[in-house]
Image (cartoon, rainbow, N blue to C red; front, side, top):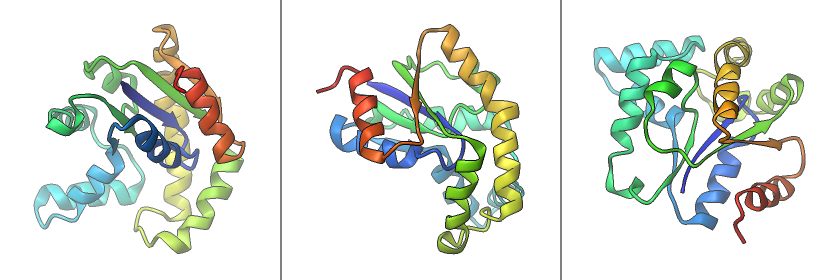
Length: 181
């Protein structure tokens, strides 16, 4: 099964992605994790990635699509995956030809997302988790990713999930909509 998790930052994508990985026995891949690893590299590309992440803006579409698709060529993803954080733009979605089965959209309000994320600022120690960068990413979600949701809805791949409920309730709802026992 090939799944994509979409939602505003703080919507619970990684929480649900990790639960789904255990249940479905397919790997979870976060594009954010890929880019944070690249940002640690002491190369011009690594510095560029780090500066881009820290500013809260999106990586270029073409490069992002190439990197994610290259990762998905690894053997561990041949039987499926749970992808978080990609695609973030319609251009990326159109470039991504990987036979997605379902797109799970975790719906959370901006207010709820900011409340959840504000608790992470002190705990996370990530340079891209300043309040300013978080607000920029929330704005970016509405500007760039909202159209991706419409794109997948038109393809009948979108599954809308209320992400403001308890974690176990959300997980049960996802499994039920995926027809997984």
